[in-house]
Image 1 (cartoon, rainbow, N blue to C red):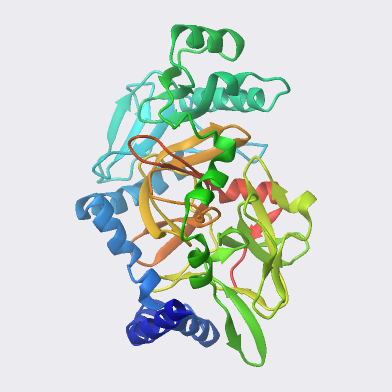
Image 2 (image 1 turned 90 degrees about the vertical axis):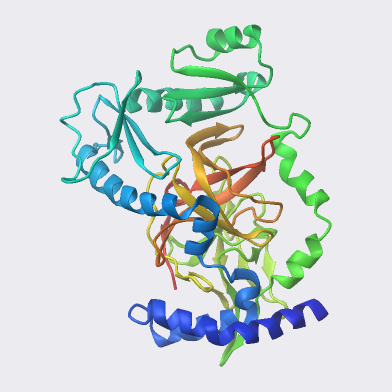
Length: 431
């Protein structure tokens, strides 16, 4: 109780500076009701939890030169991809046969991969230069191999996960990494003989902790978090708004047993919050009202993406904004790109930054995830992962679904929002 009182007192100290920030960034795009909500959010949380600006966080983590290069490269990427991609009849995207992918290097510059020295078909905006590398495998080939591995991994009696613990697309390496549970010629031969054989496969020893089975990792981490109860109590948000009481959720705060992801609307038109399936639980306000729950588990839970849609009810309200940083857009950030900087907000670690280390990976029971090196911890599950360019644009990429440890640091696994929405029959929404 003392801790919470101190939190609110500190929030008042920072309230006026936060108010100025909200006005200066969003005065042309938000209405008075939205601003009123933001003032209430700042009153409760202030800068104690979200004082760092996303832009400053990313500069501190990646370096100013990287972010400057990345901003210019990202605009170039959007122009480039819009000129080489074609929508196919199934609603997917087709790439030129000679296209092998794109990534951002360690300096934040865009690199285009191709199987052909002649890149005339690749449109690069006039007056701009971009690095090009010639590699062996096309992006279409790598994606086809991933699709085959997905089908195998979900097939009955598959032995894939007896041999490997994860598979990831390495765009810069122009290969698919197969992380073996035991690195030996016997296991390599076994995989090639019983699962899939291709020269695009690259076998490595799994770097992850073998003593913690993936399926039980979240429960293990929960048991190791001594401050779990404190985290829950200090990060609740309950605000009285006349004439009715509302329980306010914001990205990264607690919902159920995890963290708030992003807002969506289901086919029936009801609004709710996307979080992880393994942490989705009935969320009850201090007054006893159930303010969020999974009303239709058969439709609104998806195990392969570890996602769930929790319907807002009885005054449950979502504020689509990162305090001190302005509103989230209701647009998908686009396909993750290796080297792309991203930000995660969760109730344990609050706001952390990293890059996409693999845009496409497979794990037992999960498919088409992305991987990042941002720091995360128990309780962050379900927290929003977003992409920012500059100081004012925050687009939803997905939610954090798992943390896997390795000697050099943890890997955070992300479920993409576009795949979640497609599987759960959702569409983005804000207020």
